[in-house]
Amino acid sequence: MSRVLELLNGDMNGDAWEDLCVRCYRLRYQEQHYVAIPAIHKGDAGIEGYTKTGIVHQCYYPERYYSDEELYRHLRTKMTADIKKLLDNATRMKSLGVPSIHEWHFNIPEYRDSRILTHARAKQEEVLSAKANKPIACSHIADDFQIVIKIADDFAPEIGCIIRNNYSATRLNLAVQHISPIRWSDCESEKVNNIRRKVKAVMNIEDDSDPGLNKIIGIYVDFYISGVENMAKLRISFPEIYADLYRLEQSYKNEVTIKTTMNTDQRLNNEVFTGILTEFGEKLEKDFSNTFDQASIGELKQSLVAGWLADCSMEFRRKLT
Amino acid sequence: MKKPFLPQIGDIAYLMQKAVIIREILETFQIVRVCFLNDDTDFYIDIISLKKQPDYRISSLSINLFTGGQRI
Image 1 (tube, rainbow over the protein chains, first blue to last red):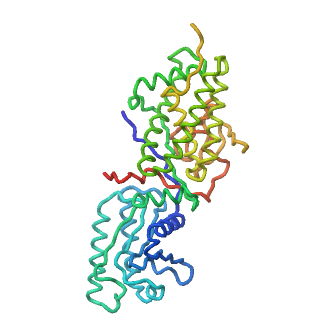
Image 2: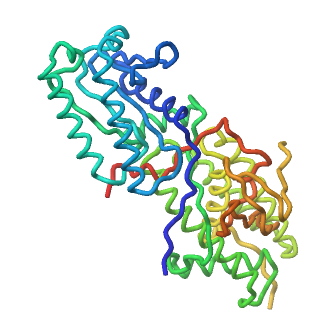
Image 3: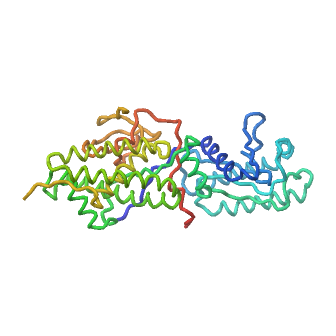
């Protein structure tokens, strides 16, 4: 039975999400003279910021993990409340310098139920209808008003730039909940055999049926699989961060090959391996603690080491038989 | 060099902002088996993923939110 890759959800809250969204909009809409609206004095009138071209945006981040149905209901409730604020705050909007509003963006991390798109369309029609019926009260709404749902993925380039340049306290999370039983069948047998050979050398065990040995092998197979998947996701969505990580991994891999090859005493395999883990972990923390959260640093450390075990960058001396 | 956090079996530590109990330590491999409080599911993580205290200053976004445009 295959298991779904269970990612540990990141730690994000509404304030941090709002801060991140404002930074994304500032980057993307710099030429449209984006203005952020702090919600300190008299509130923010239901928007986080606006551009001179008539784009406004509002953010929402769920308080906890919700089921698909729960998430849809929370998104719907939030959108309904904020569209009402939009309609009720014409005077406040104008006093803040908001021009005629052509697009109202709803910034959310994700949606999983397409009914929110239907709801957005319905609210859009409601706003246009209100505009038609009360043109003076809705003079802040443009005739071509649209509601646009923007998710985290829509701002991957900006988020990558913000994280990579440490412009905020937000990090990427790619930590996986490695639960047994292990996904042996998802890994080529050659890779499994490579991992097995080397873990046996590190643990100084010859018996293939040893339960401790097989537990460790299984753990590293799982880290290997998650590593391949996470690196693929990074390469697609955050190519510059991927390139930084790839460069570090490749340069340290060469050191690993030298360290393991030069060790001629199989009794020291354990010590050499532990030394590699410690040193690589320190390098990852030094170079990427502003990019990834701590759990992800640990995940990367083990998954990249699993890659070296599986792909023969590491070779340990074995007992001669 | 920063002194590493070395928990013992039975200790409570923090994975991101969530508390976990240490169930097993695989010292050579720097891997620990933990479970969240009030949850029976054990899972394995690297020991440097853990901290003595939660760090509420840092927020994180799951890479699962990013599909590179390949929405299903």
